[in-house]
Length: 368
Image 1: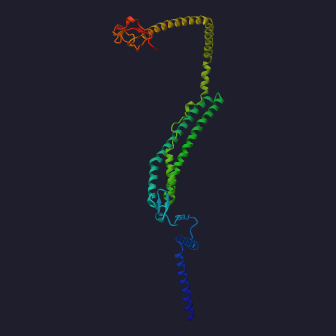
Image 2: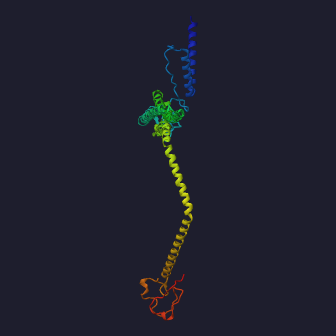
Image 3: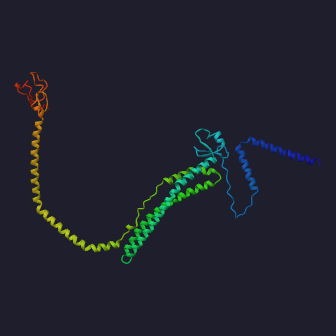
């Protein structure tokens, strides 16, 4: 009887010692290893007690708590400068502990970026989407117009020419291919807009804000790209330039006889002009030479006349150097009033000796 309680005490004492040792070992271990051990023990407990659920009801997605790679702690903040989620220790120990980093809470950054992207979608992307849809409707209506005009032309041409119909179909195919390509381009942009909007709202509904924050910059860049990307508004393909070969052929047949008469009349006129040109070529040449010689003689006379007038205007006074103009011809020369040595003269020709100190000008050719 006494031995049994002693055994129980010994067993309990061993358990207490083992627990104390585990506590000491946990105190000595770093916090990262403790979290890993706790997570592994939690996973073992979950595996030991599996939950039974209905196979027809889909199981809820298991959320994985993401932790900081530097401190192995859950994310609580978001660095706006680096665009990375961080933990509290990152703001204290680093690397996000300087004034260069703008730190916000995850929830605040999530709300701010959600509001910004949602506003951009409503303000810009939805308007662009409506424009693309309207352009697609316009192109589809233009396609219907082309088909309608094509059927009218086809009805007139079917009875007479099979080749006309073949060329018409080729022209229609080219136009429809161009317009279909434009629709595909617009539809691609429209699908891209829908994809951006759906990805935004899908990420917005996820409880964990980290995936949204990591992809928010990419979503915003895609929105800016789609808003700035131009699209062709003008539809350059028209239905009314489809080939109307039957109508043109009928008009050509009606004008064939008149064109033949016109060609013959032109040929007669050309022949007459050529014959008259050959006959009158010498006469015209002689007349042109005579008129040219007369014109040259008149110009030579004018050149001689103006050259003489120019020579007259080039005469200057020997004493004062003034030009021979009307106001100086009969005026008094201020430099020729008294006998002196004329060191500075303006003409090559010297006046007579009795002309000095007379107060008169003496005009001659200037010194060049």
